Each structure stands twice: as C-alpha cells, then as structure tokens.
Length: 446
Image (cartoon, rainbow, N blue to C red; front, side, top):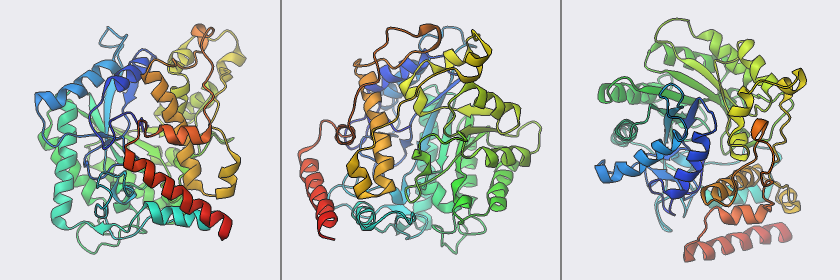
C-alpha cells in the first residue's frame, strides 16, 4: 500500500514509516510487505514515494535497515517474526505531471509504448477525460538502452533489500505500472524482442539479473494483474499462460494476484459481496502451476474481510496465501485477532469487525470519475497511516485487545486529498488551485 509518508519528491523511510510499520510488526502478521518503493526517482506516483537510492552505501541503506527492524518489532523469536518483503516498482506511464518527480516542466514519463493513460470507463464524463489529460502526458517509448537501465534499477532495488536485511522483494507488475504495461497488448505495441509474443522477456531479464547478483536465500515474488483479461485486453488463457511460463523459470517464490489500473482502477474498489473479486482467476492460476520443488505459491489480495471467507479461499484451493491491505490500516492487529480461538462458531466465521470506508461526498458524484474516487479511497487510508505514524491514532483493536481504542477519525473527502501532500510546497498550492478552477469551469460551463 502507498503510505504517502516520504518527503515530497521521494526519499528514504523516516520516523513516521518506522512507527507505522512497528504497529504492523507487533500485529501477528506472517509476512509484511512495504508499499511500492520506486526504482526511478523520476517516476513517482503521488509525490511522497519511497525511492531506491541512486547509490548504495551504508548511509543510504541505513534508513531501510531501520524500516526492516520496525517490521519485526515485538517478535523476539526468529520463527515468530514475520517475513519482510520490499516491494519495488516503476510507475511507467502512470507517473503524473508535476508530482511525478520530473519537475514542473519535466519531460514525459517512460513506457513500453507511447500509449497515454485515458479512462476506459464508459461512466466517466468530460471531467474525467480532462483530469486524465491534465495529469498524464503521452509517454515516450523506452529504447533498448533505456530498458537495460530499467532492469539495472530493479537489480539495485533487490540489492538494497538484501543489504538492508529484508527476506526478499516483490516486483510490482500490476495496476498498469511499467512492467504491467509490457504484459498487455493495449499498451505494448513493440515489434522488438520485448514485444508480443515475448512480452514476458523484461520480467525474465530482471529475474535472471537479480538471481545472478543477490545471494540465496532470498525470496522473490511478483504482483500480476488479473483485470486485463476481464476488460478484454488479455484473455483468461493468455493470462494463465503468463503464470505457467513464469512458474516454469523456477525463479519465483510467490505470485500475488491483484488487478486494475488507473484506466480501470478496480484495485481501489470497496468490498464486494464476493469479497475476493479475483478469486476465480487465482484458483485457475493455482491449478495451472505444477506441484513440486521450485514452484511458486499463489497469494490472493483483494477485498477479503472475514475469517470464514479467508478459510474457504484456502480450503477450496483458490490460493495458498491471503494478502490483507486496507483492513490492516484500520486494524493493525487484525492478524492476531484472526488467529485467536473463537468464543463461538459465529464469532469464528465472521469475526465481527466493521471496516469503515472513506466518505462519499456529493461532489464526487458530480465529477463522475472513477479515478478521483479511487484517489479519494487511497488518500483516506493514507490519512489514517499518517495518524498512526505520528502517534495521533493507534488503529482499531479487535479480539482480546478490543476496548478502549479510539474510533476511526472523522476525515472528510477534501481533507483526505489535501493531507496527501502535507506540508505542501508553495508551487503545489498554486498548481492545485489552478487545476481545481479548470475542473469546476468544465463542470459549470460544459
């Protein structure tokens, strides 16, 4: 999950990260994964990203050592401590103007091909289209030399994780970011050795370089996108072929199933009645991978809430592992509560926990754009993480720890969005005001 706690313009973890991750470190989790750490400081997402240092030295590695130590707080026994994973990413074409790390007048972001980010949701109106055009410039196509440089950036990210003492890394190849852009025919129009049908070549090259550089034991996972085939850009069988081929390399330890991108931001959707909206694909992926040594396990992440659903997901062969994101922000000790002996069968099945969501202000319906709605959801959870990192809130407590805990703070939609960049640089104030004026001008004069 994106924390929005680093300095504006990107940088290393700080005291707020350490306090936040120490809360999760004592929460009973089996594995703790960072939010996406950008391998390129010129390709940020929302401006306050963690960034892999350009050079690795004891000084630049030290903050990541502290972060890893915070993740194991409260677990003195080696077997009891969670696995620590550094998620590394390149935002690609989804790195926005101004806050994306290239300055006010910076150039275009890089991508597999020169395909701009535009809404694919038919419900989005003119305001949404304007927002996309203002935020995301048309990207430039990576040259072969650029791709080699990107691969080395991912290798340096893995070296950072290893030297800081993390147990492994996860490559972010989902949500429309750079690697994901190579895997979809809608964003990969290349005709060289990184184009279709060799769309997995960049992942294989990254994995080969990391395995040749970083000593064992060192876990490597990958987060892949199940939503592309849902939207028609990749068929279900093509997506499963990706899983089979990556597993056949025997270089991955786990594959996380997620979905959505900025054009169809399903990864930011609230909980659905199914609760695990990619569970069926995860089940098919698990069956597609042969059993045996060297084969990766499947982790499902997406809107899982109750113990009963999680238990059925594992029991019915939908996944080997369960990933929990936003509920862990609201309830950092949720894992401990899930593992407690139930007081009754009903309690065991449901573990009654109310996970409040972000507000749905009236102006969001007027703007009618999924991108802003997803941004609001992200901003609201980031605001909660900011409060935990600054000792202003400790999260809800459930299970035996329930009682006496402050309620979830009342944070409005606009407040959550503004808090993403606190304290703001002066020029950001001006640019955001101009952006808001442009949006409202379209609303009232269209």
